[in-house]
Length: 524
Ligand code: ADP
Ligand code: ZN
Ligand code: MG
Image: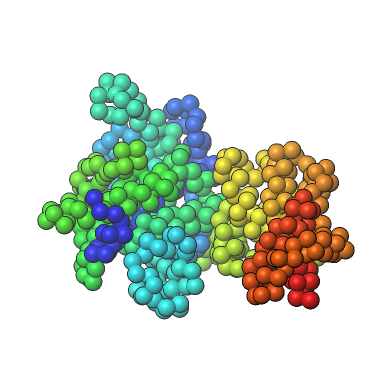
């Protein structure tokens, strides 16, 4: 199979996502009063409504409607005041009612969008980005200094309910094939679920990944779901098709299921794009089908050919009245919107003079953005001065440490006060950047203050000009040949002198001061 970048020479990928989020932060299910609890004893949170017993009537969960309206407002959607529920009929034991209650053509939230900042390595997947000058647009993207912004349309966000969970027993790895019997747990049946559908506006697997990450940040910020991809409270299906570069018509799409991590979403789409290209280039056709991405085998396999909407016999739900959201209700929800990640990033740029890149990376995780704000508070009057180095410390060293150790920031010995102290020590030239990295590691390993570590290890960098001047004079006196070479115009010899001075000072001399003094003395 060709590589993605080779495929992109000939083909353009068209990607649209369908993203389900369980509203895990609510207390009760969508149409009954059963408790929402992940991991409870099977079938302990059920009632006649979510078990689909005859005569049981649904009552909508108002808090769930608030959550979806909040999601719509946070993703620039129009809120539809008039919408209703439908029955999507299907026979499978995971849904005892034999239909899923969902929304029809009009959803609570319609016509939204998110703007994605794509930069760094992620931007390189985009075909011929460099043909665009900074500020120039092509379709839905606009070139920036270090990448581009992609405007991605959101078709709708609708309200629905989750099905129960099937456990197949006796087969391999819980699969249905080879199973002797299946168990059903209805605890999850009726869990409030919102589904967001994007326009087919995405063109690379990286854009799909970034969309998903951005949406997750937003949902976490507005507090409607715990968004756990491992536990399945945030799930993503990727639709993808190819068309020849320059073609207007879309090709036939396949739909990828089981994208339970950002990496799977990216890698599954990348594989599927290459697979489709191979089929098409060999003169084959793409069938509209649902495929499963198997990350360990690194390939996608057919699950089923696509049902059409007719198979579901979608019809209006007679047991639920159509909705009539009032302006007052919508405004009440709007008032609950917290500061969203994009707004927070802009505030960080304005208040602390951070670059857009730094600000964006800080707000990627709530824990790092909160930590940064706590640092700025701890820095007091020096906040503006220390913002950039504090941001660097968090984005690079702290993030790398947390990823490597798999721990939460709050569980480490690094407090905002210690982070600021460390950055201050380096900013004031008391320690070098190399020493700062050592102190950082020691703070985490030994749970001590940076000052104490510097003291203990006698790490203080010597910036005292008098002491350095003496060493510089000594080194210059001891190396007349090198001095002559320098005076002949070979200025690179300065590196030799710096090295000699450092050696004499056992690595504790401030390289900046040494350089300055050397340059001055050698010019004499
Ligand atoms: P379906 O009827 O198969 O569910 P929809 O039109 O509802 O298809 O779209 C489902 C998702 O697939 C949306 O995210 C949409 O943007 C995306 N999509 C639609 N057509 C294509 C296509 N040709 N290639 C890639 N994605 C597509
Ligand atoms: Zn119930
Ligand atoms: Mg559809």
